[in-house]
Image (cartoon, rainbow, N blue to C red; front, side, top):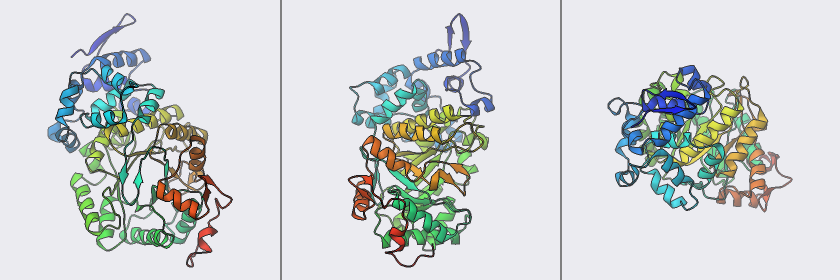
Length: 461
């Protein structure tokens, strides 16, 4: 195992595989903040050269966090398909990259391959790819999942309708919900981030979502994105719930900082099997985002991209319906500007798919970041071109509760039309039946929430 090289007459030596991974990463402000980034572009290229020659087995045998001290590492290692792994263990990371990008490698080949890859291997191969490589490779992969409907089929682009409200007012939430539905959003999920993480608050919103879903016979899924333990208690007390949500990290320490463990997820899944309102079998929703482990001092000297790949290794063991990277939510401390956000979004989408999880993206940014709405629309278009499962939609792209910017309700419709994509099939049929779309395009009824208030029961919105 060689961890040194000479480049342009300069000698570079790296102390560990973890250091190679960190310094081979594209420039990220979070890695700089952690003190682990390459000091120069030449050092970055040198690290990539060393990384390209390392073997799959080198990366597998040197996890970022020790097996004995981390359940994320144990989950990843213990569930590896050894038959697949043994077939590629002596491949270099460069050879793995070439296999993934080869025109002869099929979607079925990559689905089989993913079962033999640890998170560190997934991160390593992504570090050797340019943006168009990430787009090309991700477009070859489809990962589907089924709750009430099936997400991730080729030719579709779904949306999570996010009707967040600054005070959790149920009627205000409902008004935003109706507007989003009128723009063709919501086939992935009707999913709200609550202001107040209380059992009563979550239950009230879930009940309204369930009422709307049932009254208008909307083929979709509902979820309120409180803490996993609050959601568990709400379901125990009878709240209707299709899917349970949790933000996750790439280390056990990071997950404990979020207030849960793998056992908590297992409890949630078993509860939904008994009392959930979805058909299933995929009933979990996870969110990630590069840099969260640094916030909780749970990164163990590992770069944020590799820690992100470990999130997907954790997620896939619970067969979720949805996973997404909230790519620019944390801020410029971890992703400084639009260039870093777009790169991270493409990395995360590819790594999630290669890990075998049904991957979406919240194409977002904060107001103190060097990015704007055009940048996020660029990312959404790029991800649409490489088969992202879903993006988000909020009124006018401005979330009044979380105080960040993401895609607007109408963005998904434009991307679908430009790229020849459709919503999830049952939802697509529902939109056509209700005159919201015709032959896949929005009609004059788009943006009119009274479609629902005039024909439904009396809503206070």
